[in-house]
Image (cartoon, rainbow, N blue to C red; front, side, top):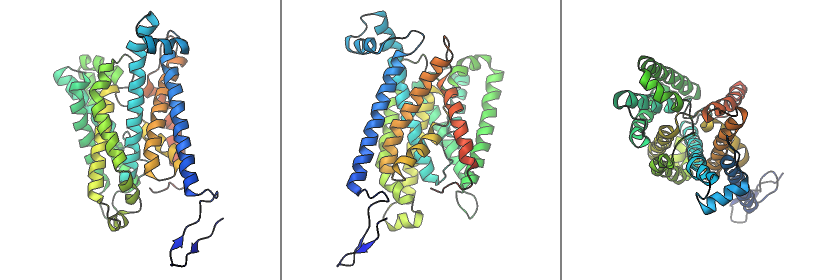
Length: 356
């Protein structure tokens, strides 16, 4: 292990990390890892376009992407599987980014849009929109999803921060569970009393990428992009916030501004993603913990890594759902729940859950 030394001017010189790698080497290593993860995402994306009820060889996939709808396979690739894959990439990145933001803003390692009620708030608002106006068009329902996500997030935060101790992780998790239960009951009541609403909601409610045209992505992409760029712009402020509110203020970071902008980014990301494909759980919880074990707590790396890994995980879950139930398929939201639940149980059963 290296030791801390002091220069002739009295400045403290910090040693390299425990592995003896200097900072420049650490940057190169993380950049290489990010590029490698991006390469894996591209491979999974090609696999997503190739795998389905009708398997299409990878070379034929590339031919269809290059030459267009010159064959039946070309139409399947461009009209069905390519929009599905691109939507999975965008939604997976958005949910993972929202999970990083929520864990950083609340300093709660168990926070994610699903556990803290944000997804269910968006779902409830969309169900109300379907019941009243009869529309599932994302261009229409996205605004209700935004409102529902924002109201649910504010309510959970208010319930979880009452008292002198501030936003304790357990209190926030309990508040999110309670709010989600109430909103889930509202959804159940509406769908049971209105069979027509249930017919429109049942596939959307489990979180699915199937059968969605490219227009869905073009509708929500501006909101997803705005939320993602806002999150990346807050990376330095989130690093300061991780040191505590007082330290962040001493470093010149606006704590209230960071929390407000972070909440806006979460609302944009979760509202648009949920409006497009329905509620998908555990991406926002699992991915930040997986990535943090590689990148550490630095949000300048944690956020872009999480975007790539979140996209990969959701697209891979969608592919797995098509493979295990041929000729039918299991929706991506169900696959992520099966994969994420054991991870969450293991995380909760740890004797000590690290504070963020």
